[in-house]
Length: 366
Image (cartoon, rainbow, N blue to C red):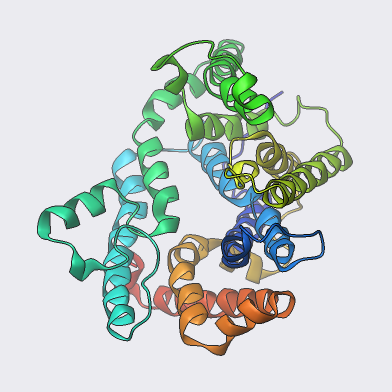
């Protein structure tokens, strides 16, 4: 028997909170990882302080895609494309403007802007500005939103599958996931594991369809909807998740230690280490009931604010990095600086998101 429900999925609230913290953690760790990538680091090194934080947060983006699929593809939940699309697109546009203005101010004060195609808006002519906005991401972390909005446009297609009666629905979904594995994951994993020794089995465009995060979107629905059929003990998911995290950390460290130019291959969201890690985390939460409600009202509230926190956190983190002593502390003492700037970013981003949500006129646009 499959499991779907019309009520709030409180276990996904917990996952959304954890994923939001994970994204901030990986972006915090990336400060050190990028700075130390060419240092040929030993195990006990500044690089691995950042690598540990970055690796520990890598499950988050995949879990966001899978959580969206679990909810939006649920046949008992109503989906209307326009309001769902605008609910994400409008605040994203607002924050793109905010980031552009913030980067102008930062550049004027001699600090670099937040990474992305709008790092230095005043240096772009009108045509370059349009290309920067459309080609993006305008800010580095917004690639996720670009991808999510693209997937939203395909949701009516996937709803045509999930609205089917059983067993036809299950067969079609398994067929799609099989195509995703063959067309996308096999060549990706083969290249990651074997490098140039992995043969090119088929040329483009077959290898690009069905591609990437659409597969995660559908996988999230399958793992959630058929959780009663998937007989895996929670402890087993913990073991798989720990293995994926360890693999991500060790593979990245060894690549940096060897001076590998592709040092961040293990960080790729669809390569084996991160995919195992994120699927295990998602299945652990989505595959079991978490009781009648969240442990604390704060969990539900943080979950509701998670997208706004996601949008603002990159600006908060970057400003703390370039304009406060925390940035210097991260550079000089990463074992102390990384946790402190992470906590500061979480707190400040949450407060900003909470305050904006208290203003009814801003809820739709920010």
